[in-house]
Image 1 (cartoon, rainbow, N blue to C red):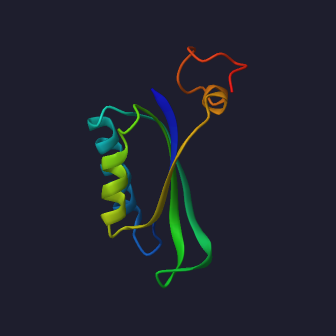
Image 2: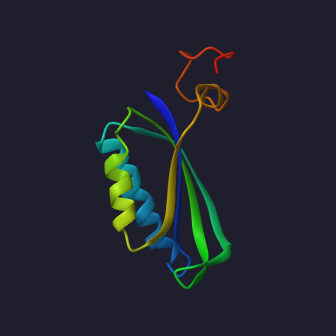
Amino acid sequence: MRAYEMMVICDGDLDESTVAGVINKVTAQIESDGGTVVKTDKKGRQRFAYEINHKTEGFYVVFEIEAEPGALDGVDRNLRLADEVVRHKIIRLPDSEAHRRGLLGADVPADAG
């Protein structure tokens, strides 16, 4: 298993229930592909530093995920096609950072990385 962090920026014009639907869809797909969503942090609406697709604000959501390599490929593909999503980014966390956050359990030593 590896630890990932994924940020999804939904269109700022959407209402709360639509954003919750996007979060539920993403979580369900991650779990169906064999991953686990450890934490979901809704950052809320924030202004963009610059205009993106004629939009000036978006709803930010950060997921902390444990998954096998390649398990997030389908999620990445679906987020690229989703009309509600303005931007998204998936990064693999270094083992030391994953351990600091309490991800990956106790099988990673504290001085790794």
